[in-house]
Amino acid sequence: MEKVTPGSLKAWLLLPRFQFLPLTVILVSLGTGVAAYEGSFHLGYFILAMVGSILVHITVNVINDYYDYVDGIDLNTQRTPFSGGSGVLSSNLLRPSQAFWFATISLLIAMGIGGYFCFARGWWLFPLLLIAGFSAYFYNVYLSRWWVGELFAGLNFGPLLVLGSYFVQTGRYSWEALVASLAPGILTSNLLFLNEFPDREADQKGGRRHLVISLGKKDASYLFVILLATSYLCILVGVLTKMMPLMTLIGLGTVIFGWKAARGALKYHNDMDRLVPILGANVITILGTQALLAIGYLIATVI
Image 1: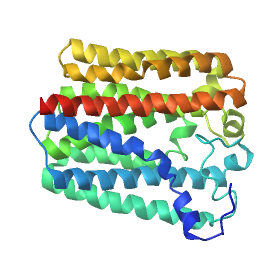
Image 2 (image 1 turned 180 degrees about the vertical axis):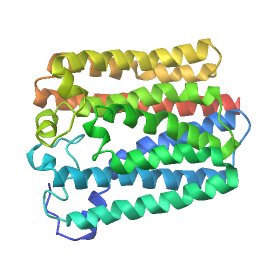
Image 3 (image 1 turned 120 degrees about the vertical axis):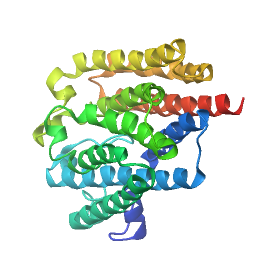
C-alpha cells in the first residue's frame, strides 16, 4: 500500500473501498429503472434509497475488513486490486475498533432510512430489509462459514437490492422486477466467486467455508463459467417471455469480456499472477452487463 499516515483522512477514505460501490449505484438505478418503465418514479425516494443502499454496502466492506483482520485472513492473503480487502487494518492505519464502529454506525443510519420507507411505502419492505441487514453484518461471522456466502452476495446485490429499489418507487413487488434482478444477482455471486480464488488458502486457514474451498479451483472454474452463461440466458429468457423490454438485450453487449473471463478462469485458475487480469475482465463483465440493463430500461422508458 502507498504511504498513508495512520489515522489520517486518507486512511478512513480507503477503508470503505469506494471503488466497489458502483455495483450498488447501478443496481439501485436498475430497480428504479424498472419502476420508471412501468410509470412510477419519485426523485426523492431514488436519492434516499441510493444513500441507504450505499451505506449498507459500506457496512459490508468495512465489517468484512474487520473480521478478516481479526481472523487473520488479511494477514495471510495475497492482495490484488479486486480481492484481499482494503489493507487498512493489516497496515495498522486504523484500529480494528474504529472499523467496527464505522460499519455499525453506517448500518444504523441505513436502518433508519429503511424504517422511514417501511412507514412511507409499506411494511412488506421490512422482511427484505431484515435479510439485507442480517447478511450485511453477519456475513463473516456466519454466512461465509456455512457455504452460502456466494448465495447471499448474489441475493443481496441482485434481487433484494433491485426489488427494494423498485418497491420504494411503486409500493409493491412484481414478477417483472424479479426477472430483471436474476442476471445481476448471478453475476454478483460470480464476482465474489472468482475473487475467492486468490484467497482460497488464507480463507481456509481463517475458518471460512465457500465453494472454491469445497470444490477445488478446477471444478470451481467450471461452475463459474456455468453461472456466467446462465446470467446471459436469464436476459434472453426475460426478453423472449416479454417480462423485460426488448432494449435490455443490450445487456448481452459484454459477452466479449465474459468470454475472456470464462476462458481465463478455466485456464489460469491455479496461476494467481495470470488470474488477476481475468478478475478485472470479470468486473467489467458484471458492472457492464448490469449497467447496460439499467440503460436498456431507461431507453425503453423514453421511447
